[in-house]
Length: 375
Image (cartoon, rainbow, N blue to C red; front, top):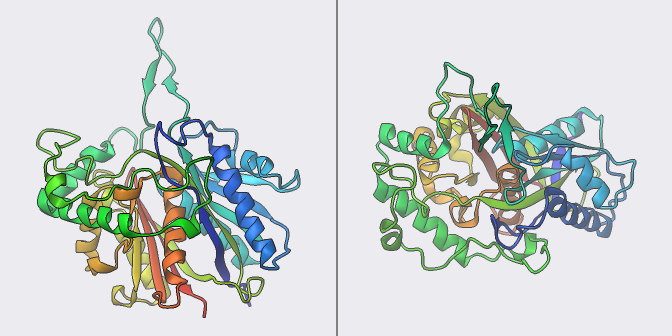
C-alpha cells in the first residue's frame, strides 16, 4: 500500500512589503531560517528521519537553484539536495504537490517543500539588444507566446471584472472583509521572525469599504482594481514538512487527499483555479458543499469573487482570516502560505475537517490541493 503523504510543521516568515523590512534579504536569507525552524520542530517532536530533498517554488530569484543554496545556508550539510520550481504564482503549491507525489510513491520519506520570493532583491533582466540598439529591460517574462492574449495581471483583473459583472463596490466589500479579518487575527504561532520583522507588514486596521472606495483605479482610469482591493508586491517564504502518515504519527498533521493543475484562457488568468478545482474534486469524489475552508490567493478581489461565483462557493469559508489583499503576495511563496494558513486554522480543536488551497497563475493556469485534518 502506498504511503499517505501528510503536511506537518507549517511555518512562514512575516510577509514584508517590497522595499521595506525584508528589503535586504535574499531568497536564501528568507528561506534558510524557516527551513531550520521546520527541522527543529520535527526533531523536538521525535522525528529523526533525514531530509531527502528541499523543494521550493520561486519566480523572480537570481537563478542558481535557490532551494539548494537555502538548504546549504540552513546548515543541512552537503548531502541534502535542493530543487527550485517555477509555476509562477502557483510555484509554492506546486513544490508541495511534487513532494507529496514523491512521498506517495515511496521514493522519499521526508521532503521540505514550499516557496520563497524576494521582490526586493530580484535581479533586473534585459532582452538581448538588436544590432546597434540598447538592451531593453523587462519587468516580467511572457506568460504566453505571440498569437495568445498575454495581459498584465492588473489589466486582466479589470477585464475579468467587466466580463463577469463584478462591481467596484463588491470588490471593495470583499477587500474590506479581508483587511478586517487579517487585522483581527493572531498569526504569531506560524511565523518565524526575520531580524526585527515579526509580523506581516501590510496589515492595517481600519480599512473600511468607505476608505477603500476613495482609492483610484490602479490599472486604467476605467478599471476597478485598486491598491486596496488588490494584493501588494511582497517578500516572504513558507515551508512545510511533507512526509508519510506513519512517520508523522502523533503529530498535528494535514493529510493530502489530492491535487490538480489545469490550463485556462490566458486572457483571463484569474479563472484558472476553476478547472483545477473541478478536476481535483472529481478525482477525489468530493463536492464543493463538503469544503469547510478554502484558501485562494487574493491577488485581486475580482479573482476570488469570479472563482466563487463560478463554483458556487460559500464566501464565508474563503480566507476566514483574510488573505493576500491584506497580507501581501510574495509570488513564489504564496501557494505554500495558503497551506500554512490552512494548517493553522484546521488543526485547532474546533477547526474544519476538509480544506482546499488554490492559486490563479499568469498565462491561464490553476492549481489546487485538497487536505483533511488527521484525527
